[in-house]
Image 1 (cartoon, rainbow, N blue to C red):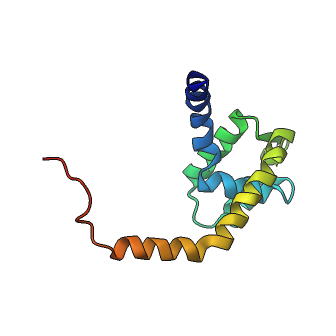
Image 2: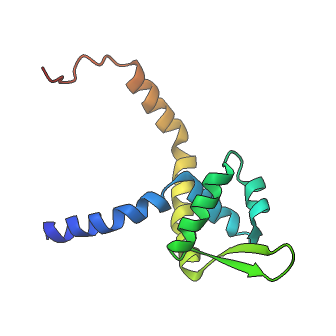
Amino acid sequence: MLARSLYRCSTTLPMLEHIANKWTVLIVYALTQGKKRYSELKQQIVGISPKMLIQNLRNLERYGLIEREIYPTVPPRVEYSLTPLGKSLVEPLAVLGEWAYRHILDVKAAMEQYDNSPKDDYWEPK
C-alpha cells in the first residue's frame, strides 16, 4: 500500500507542479471564456512576462490541457483553447480558488501570528 502511494506521488508530483502554479490557474481561467490569441492572454493576465506565458502555454499544450490552432494567414494567427481534458480541470481549480478567496483573511492572520511569535522553540542543529 505504501509503495503504491509513493509511486503515485512520484508520478503525479511533476504534473502537479505545472498545474498548481499561479500562471496555469490564470491561463486556464482566461481560456474558460473561449479561444484567445496570445496578445489577449498577455493583456488579461496582468504581471506575466512574455517568456513565462509562452513557457506555460507550451507546458499546458504538452500536458494536453490546451490546444493551439494556427490559421494560414499572413501573418499567421494562433489561438489557444481548452481541450476536453483542460475543461475537466476548470471545476477543481474553481473550488481551490473559492477556498482561497474565503480563507484569505484566515491565512493572513495565521501568517501574522507566526511572524510575530518567538522562534526560540525550534530545534537548531549544533
